[in-house]
Length: 288
Image 1 (cartoon, helix red, strand yellow):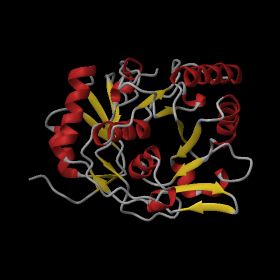
Image 2 (spheres, one colour):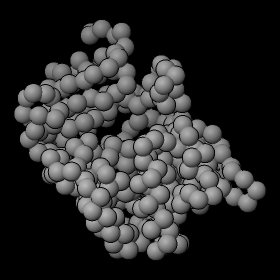
Image 3 (cartoon, rainbow, N blue to C red):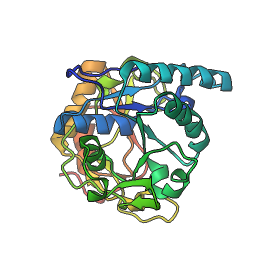
């Protein structure tokens, strides 16, 4: 699904989910966060496109080709200035196939890549054969805003790109502003993610949603990319407002909190209002 607010001009950036994620019940959380930030703190327009199929169906090679065609048609319709992807280490082959088609058909559109892969291994996406124009490394809020504004790339951390003579890399960005914005849930097909299932709080049937009350991690595990980011908690009032929005607008009645490190004060507040489920570490804060 793709939606956007009409602000009188072409979409600045169209975030695109990989075809292999068409049957995933996990929403594109990174895109939702960036869309929420852009909506609250900038005048730039963004949209999210993802072609969804039943989580019980396989994303076959033929179905991937169909989804790629649908993505290209949406880019033709939206005519964005930038197309954005979020990549994990297993995504390069699929990304190369799709992004090359985008660059062939829409040479004027810049392909921007963020997520885990460019953060930990930018070299894999900056070779001469890569269809990626610009990488966003680390937290994407400020680098993306700077990129959309047409600013000088070298002026902010978190960007990497090729230019004549080699690769330029300004390092990994860490967003230090307030987490005072709500993810842009209205930009995706919430009816798909709000179906009753056992995917959120197993084995119970519920209309659940995956959410974050914090981003980053304080630990420094050698096998994880999160050592490149810092732990930041959402403002409690903003997080409660987000949960109320999900409940009152979309009928969500349970939440899977995906934080790497849980804030117990937030969890105790949420527990008094809605069912939630979480896995992972927790800080030592005790309930008041």
